Length: 377
Image (tube, rainbow, N blue to C red; front, side):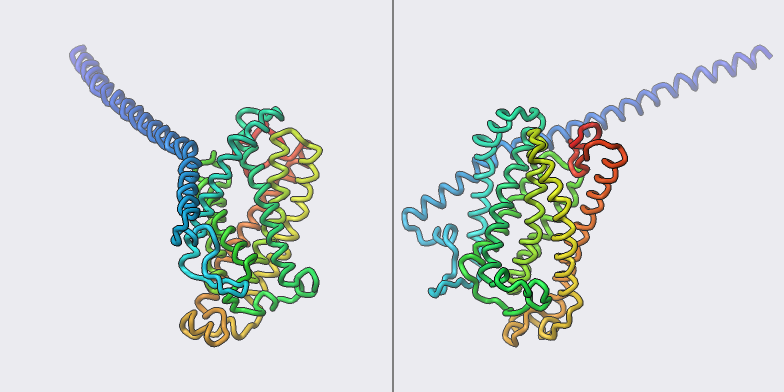
């Protein structure tokens, strides 16, 4: 009996001895995996910080080279700086060289952004006692506010050029976004507006990956891709009027959102609160009601020449049509994707307001990671 007990104890001890290294090995492997993960993340963020530090210098170098070549009369550099394809009567055609113009002004936007951050907005953030960890956010929102004001103003000037403000009935006419299509030649203002918009949103798509990630990072990336898709699609298929209307509707509420965020970081609540209120009011009007009406008109309004299928874009244009049925489907998909994003963001705004009413406190911005938790608006 005693021998049996000893054997069992010996066996138990042996099993414990053999299992201990296994546990130690598993713990060691887990620690190694965690270290590798931390190392990868560290390298990833180090790479992004390097990009953030030097993107402005690279962009300024490219701008300086192109401007230098243009100044010395190199003809190939002209299409980077000046709108290509002038017709001689005040209008401009479209072509592959438009990409040169977009590339140059993409570098210009990156250069201006970097210079403003370094020499204007960061000193201003320190002057207004913005918290150190919020200073970059303050710069980002101030830069966006400046752009959206300029973009909306330019878009309004284009609509004025098209007679939208002189004839308010055009806003109620769903067919106005097709009238005059296909627009094969653009005025200086229209073409500049389109190509600069493409350059800016390309700049946003690049910088969103080097900025600190927000809670809606995925939605923002999708939004930038869809926006670039709509700009490119409407430009290439000559649906210019519809593209300008959509762009102006999107810009209006963005002015107040960016301004409200910048003022919130700077603790300027006398401007931030009214700006935030205007954003909450304007968002459903411009981005859901008016934009939803545009989407409804494009998808369901019976326009024979729009849905005619001639087999190719060239054939559509030759027959006075804008799109084939396939291109119409692509347009519908992009517009609906953008509308879904607006509904998603409006849902987040409603959540924000309901939460602030329930808690009796100031509203939090649920879109930004560093505005979550205890940090309030």
